Length: 622
Image 1: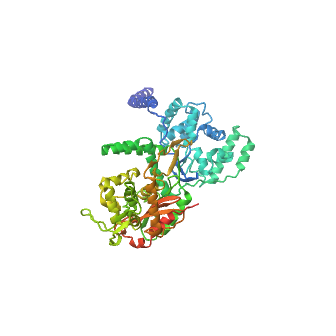
Image 2: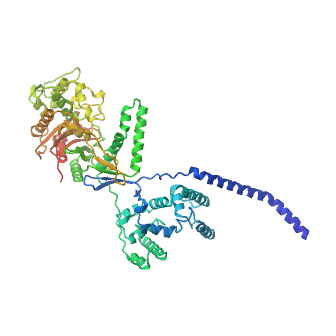
Image 3: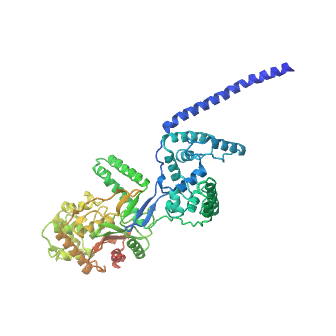
């Protein structure tokens, strides 16, 4: 019997040899992989800032936030700005040995392993603060032993490459607090609408209760559960001697009143333009614009444009504050008034209003029914300007080119230049008139004659300073005198150019006053000196002519509400576009009215809808 047992034992042992060999090889392979992983961790881990976007805010001229752009609400704080009470809340409850271990806590891991083995799941974490930072920055939240092993190696390496304070700061700023809120600073401003250092200890403990389980402790849905965990945290602090039992009881009794932050989302017509101008400001400040203009090939141009867009995205992601010239009362008035005027189905408008004293854009109208990211007709609708271009391209250059006056005689009879035979409105033919009369009634034939007198290229030279984006050499033709461009201009471009008739100088009007970082340091601001566009005599004459239009000409119906009001109207063939551009003592504006898909609106022209819109845009909102 003994011999039989020995033989059986020998045979079993013999049969197990291959299995032992397989197991040994598997263990050796896993150990080898682990060593390689460990060796490579130091080379592959990069302690770069996480790829996140910090919110950007826009303030109006009064310093009030009117728009915010973000998907995740974040408000990073330096560790020294985070109250010690808040720091203790997390250290005591999450990782009491944080400042002693080297990234992981062996005892905690053993406890977690024992609990998980008994429960047959991975519910027990045992992670240190360092491991949690690693998980947030470099790994997934998958609960597997393989991920846990990587987490340990990364945590150890992270501790080698940075300080405990840096790791703790990362942790406090990157924890998830539910409702797309990240970081303790953001949690304070989101749930209580106050900075972290203005919260009382009860409120601090309340927000600190959330990240343990952001779904379970979401205070908007499970307030009582959050309050219960807040009380637990206060108890833990008392037990560990951070606060007294009396303080814990007092703060548990403190009533918690949430004041949830609402995302600022006003005046989308204006804020959408601010983001466009931001890219222009960065391009101008950092040389991208000059590189784009100097590009000799389409490929080279595209490369520079793409680089500018990438740089702008990087600046925005860093979190910025944009101070603007928005006049909220004026913007609200203009939106409400123009919306009420556009009663005809699908009728649209675009407009911009500029402050004469500062040359800043105070109001933008993008169209009826405008929603965020829609087509903004103030700066994106490129339409032929009709006679509204005459002061800029015909009359002002005419006065600049010689000793001409309002009383100068001009032939307003029919004219043909080659095959081009412009007609006056209504097909009427006039004889000799004064320049003032021709301007008052917008005689097309006279305008073409003046344009020819100045010279096409010479006249267009005067437009260069205004930098109309869609006017090209192909527009250097006689129909341009009447606004007959291949594409045209935008309301903002036209209003900007008309602002030169306030004092003869021109600097491109802007919406942005300054762009600052989160600490309030100025990153960008416009620094453009005005240039001379017109002589004082020309400005005076043009202003007189535009005033006469309002009093006696095609601008009758425009209200005369300040010591000066002047304007020039414009229509295109078959009344597909209605324009008015001009100014009073306070503002310069241009408004376009029409359909996105051009069609005649002569009936609305007869009703002087464009003049009524112009009146509202010149309204001074106090």
